Image (cartoon, rainbow, N blue to C red; front, side, top):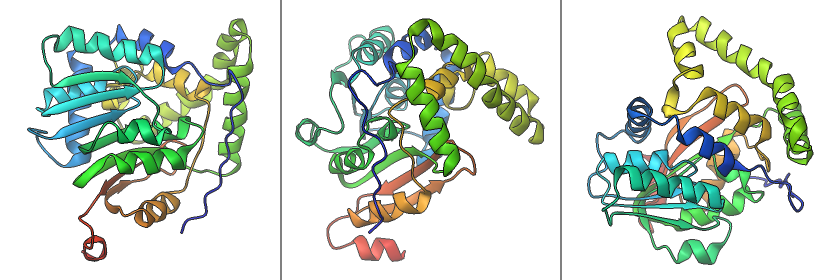
Amino acid sequence: MAEIRPIDAPGAGERFEFGANWRRFLARIDEAAIAEAEASLRELLGVESLCGRTFLDIGSGSGLFSLAAMRLGAGRVHSLDNDPESVTCTEELRRRFFPESERWTVGAGDVTDAESIRALGRFDLVYAWGVLHHTGAMWRGVDNSCSAVATGGLLVIAIYNDRGWRSRAWRAVKRGYVRAPVPLRPLMLATAGPPVFLRSLTVHLRARNLAGFIRRWSSGGRRGMSGWHDLVDWVGGYPFEVARPREVVEYCRDIGLVPRAIHTTSGLGNNEFVFLKPAAGRVQAASSA
């Protein structure tokens, strides 16, 4: 079994206000951002629609991917977040786009609380992209997310890549950010932000995709997200845990999941995983396929 090394134990008040950042992002969500979110779901899952499938959005944040799942035809969507402002943001998107629909429900809840996750039932698709590493109990979050996946269903998670001392250094930055007085935080962003911005520019220039860089930092880029709001999330996003791809795959295999797709990064960003939950007794066969 993969060695599990808990690295985060946030104290009282040592949590980034993700919901406040999503509230500011909400004003920028437009048709282009929604289309990007839909495209990212189709690409990651290898499907053209979610027609008739149930979808649990763990850590719904702005609600953008719950909305994308609805637009792709999901039969039922439940959005879950433990941040009250994130819940409010998701409810606002539901009000804007699907005010009369009973297919989309929104609620407060904590993925590290096994009982509350169990009470939700099982879903064909459980989506926890870039969420579990911010709980302070990442592996417990993986366990509980897995428990919500129906037999034959998929678990989608994205977890920050472990880059050794670089990850530890960023953890210190993030912890410092949430501990800092609010008036000092813009200065921290101004100090820590440029390296992230320049790395993004370098990656796009190497790919000869300057237009993509401009879109990323102006109107939104991959996954429909905003470069600026992602930067604030990155610098302030604490609790903060990381894992190497092999650790995630081994851990998930040990709890009965089979990897379907893995997209890794060489940097500090997210490694993406899609896992299948096969029927009991079929894990070994599916793993050998």
